[in-house]
Image 1 (cartoon, rainbow, N blue to C red):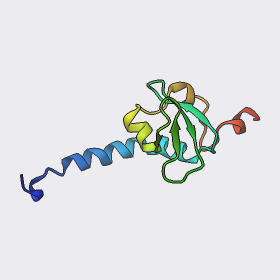
Image 2: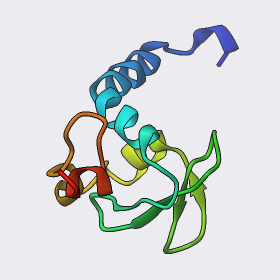
Image 3: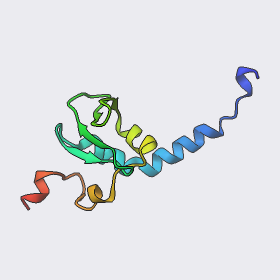
Image 4: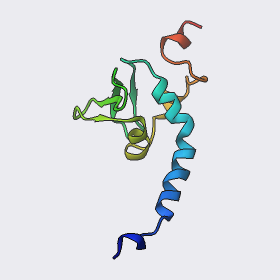
Length: 96
């Protein structure tokens, strides 16, 4: 297959998926370092202080991005999303 013969429709699907996950991605990227969360499949993560790769998988020690949590681990568990109000999270909500 020639390089120019590839089907660009998969890029459209990725863009649509990213658009659907945009609010969750924004919320994940705004979490403070040290914040723990659980992915939908049960995998525990902790937010690190790194800029590009910002989460550590606590099962195997691998680093991943917010987008990886959405794509590879099914997003965030419902227990994590219940307290989500805008960009506030963690201790900010508990003190209100």
